Image (cartoon, rainbow, N blue to C red; front, side, top):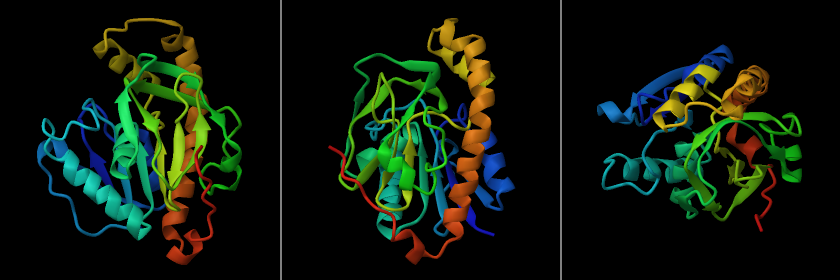
Length: 241
């Protein structure tokens, strides 16, 4: 049974249903609540880095972010299957030399659509994903420049870098596959957004539609972890332009 280390940065964004899907696929989870002072375990087969309200560059205010970025760099270099979610995606980008800034188009909160890029067809996680999957968002910062060695997999109209693979076994998603409509509405209230079309029935429909898509992606992530490392070395890397 593969062991997945889950890095939790904020009690408001635990692994939620993503954790259920990973366990359902045969993984054992080790939850590391960094915000509570948990030490980072030394041994694991896969890594999931969750979201949070802090900024990816906020090392001075959030004491564990520098260690997290070092861990992400080591995971990418070692070929350890890794998944970064929202803040986790931004941390992965910064760790590998990309750029994260305050989003020029304002926050994305609620239900959105993303669009697959051609490179996603050959990706073991995103190949079977629909052409325009539903995604649930809650972020104010954006990845403005992807790092070298990344392959863009999903784009959006407001922010183009919605999902990418870093190297051959690390994936990043700007959105929140793990969450529910109720949690997104709670996050929206914390951001001072009480209502809007992206938080109405559209959000419930998106959450239902997204559940099957991202459940299957979680299962494929566990399948990648179960592969021998040599099998991951065949993945193509498409340069981002």
